[in-house]
Structures are given as structure tokens and as C-alpha cells.
Image 1: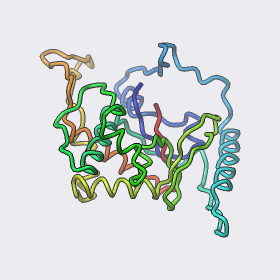
Image 2 (image 1 turned 180 degrees about the horizontal axis):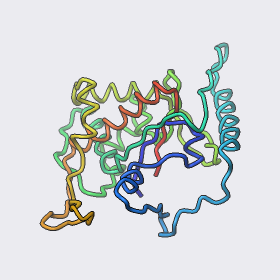
Image 3 (image 1 turned 60 degrees about the vertical axis):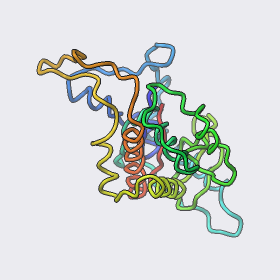
Image 4 (image 1 turned 180 degrees about the vertical axis):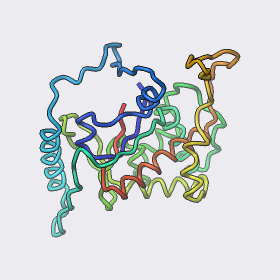
Length: 259
């Protein structure tokens, strides 16, 4: 399964009022797009709630979560706004690039050289440096601890809790994500923000094929890629996370990983 990053209201997310970059590309180029589950069946959204029902459920969940994580003696966290119309940001780093970003962070944390390439579909969680940082009690990163949601709160912490769907997840905060991304940039690249924002367009996966003038996809004369440039993939994913973080800060909306 692929990995998309989404920054926007939970109401839009659960109302399916958003499109992945692949869906957007397909529509723009006249293709049909269907989501397929891991067992090969078309994704069935089941019984649909109305956007108003979704918003009410999400707001109830939000308020319960914010009450549960409120610090004794401090003002409770202000609820972020929920609706079905606020803009959203999405892009597709996919798992290989996400893993490359973690690998670069782990290598620089422990002073080890960054491998020049990573294998296609590699199991990055098994890499010794990534697993080492994931269990390092002195260096705690939400990105390495399995966080898949970041709420628009400025304090840095994370916790396990049920999502609105009752699935358990590791939930972190935008304040924490910003610190982690700033730390990674300081360790690895020391890039300015304009450069970081450009990486989503200038770095990433090699082209595996071309779209001809007739709209047909062709892999002629293009070798199948089994290895990727580690740094290029890491910068590609990092840029998308940075874009999502900046967008989420401006709009006061959560970030979540969709896969």
C-alpha cells in the first residue's frame, strides 16, 4: 500500500471530500481511479454519514481528546476548527521515501555514513540504525515511534489513543513535528526554507515511464528501477512533511498519514 500525507480538517478526511495526488492526476488526464484494498477488492466506504454527522462525531472526539490530555492547573487546549470546506494539502511520499528520511535522520544522529542507495520496497523498520533510534530513550522522535497523526497543538508530546474510528494510533503534535523536522534539517542539510519547499518538485523517485501525446503510458527503453538515491528520496519526503507542517500551522488543522 502507498503512503499519502494529508493536512486538513478531519471532517473533510472522513467525509471523503478530498482527493489524493494520484486521484487528482487521474482526473486531470482523463483516467478513472479506484481505490483497491490489500486483498484486491475495491474499497467500500460502507454506510456513509452525512458531512454534518461526520463533523459532529469528529468534534466530539476532538473535545474528548483535548480534555484527556489537558495538563493539571493549566488552561485546556483550544479546539481547532472543524468543517467540510477548509482547504487541505496532500502529497504522496510513499514508504520508500519516508524510510529514506528516517534513515538519514538515524545516520546523522549516530554519526554514521548515509548509504548512497536504498532498495525498492525495502523494510526500513528492520534497519539497525532506524530500529536503534526508534527505541532510544534519550532521543524520542514521534516519527520513529509510529505516530500517524499530529494535532495542531504547539506543545511537543505524543500519546496513544483511539481515533474517531476506534482504531488505536500514536498521536503527536505539530509543535513536536516542527522540532523534529528542524532537528533533521540541522543535522543533515542546513537548508533554507525555499530550498526545502522546492525538494518535493526537484527530488524523489526516478521516472519509470513516460506519457505519450496519445495519453498512453510507456516504459520503452527505460530500465526498471530497483534502487533509489537515499538523499534524494529523503529530501523529497522531508519537503512534503515540511509543506504539510507549514500548511497545518497556518490553517490550524491536523496532519495524518493515509495508507
